[in-house]
Length: 197
Length: 197
Figure (cartoon, rainbow over the protein chains, first blue to last red):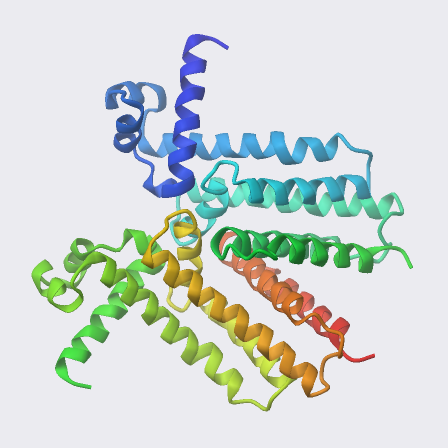
């Protein structure tokens, strides 16, 4: 990594911290420059515009999620182990608050749902890839004989997503002490009813 | 309703529209005054501070949700009819975008999860009441003999919430044409496995 890339990566880490508490629409060149003690013109040189900075930070969050949640899943044997590792990684991602203020992609989905533009497109595309990933894992678990042949893989992915979002809400917003138990119990029951009979 | 109350209600409707797209943290006395063509001092006279305005708009959203989703449910016979009407009302609330930019209480949960203070407390309390309401409906459906005696009512409410949040995400953010089918199928399956055997 050259000096320029290292600087860019350090800036993006700070930008991610801002975004995870303030939201991506709260991330501006000005607020980030203040936080980094850099000049606004220096930041412009790296990102070109507020919109490109916002895109870059969401792509940075996606790269982190890929590294911590998706990659460990695909490193496991095909079928059920990948499904279980993916769900577990997602729960840990939400629980540990990586980044600390919660997943900026999840918050961005709420911030941007009624704001057409390239940033919304990026978030929608990213979430679409996540759901496709989950659906594909379920389909492969069917092919391996780990889940039942007549499973609706799209419905399985929808239910898994709902459990993760419900967990995020009960854990991060409500600080409900039983949130993780509820999420893991619901997921175990989803797996149970999806197994071959 | 006196003139003061009517003015306050009209202001809150506009404030709700701002909040549903900009988030509650994007709602300020200044932006709302611009939108209403009112003076900032006039708005201060009604609400006292930005924080009190933000609280008032979230309470206004809760009053709307109560009127459109909770009240029709409790108007139905005890037990399963209330559970079904509540879920249906929630789906319609999300689908129709009431208010148009999506539920400000749902967005606020993401905006505020790491921002301690009275506004966060208000949102957490409101969501806690919603989950208690759902849990209580499930318990009463058990008491009526509509759902099975060993049902975990808290888990039922968690799963129902997850389906609603999953629907909100797939419908509002992803514009997925099958979102409502998935949500209704998942809920029907939740009811099926919760019935007495």
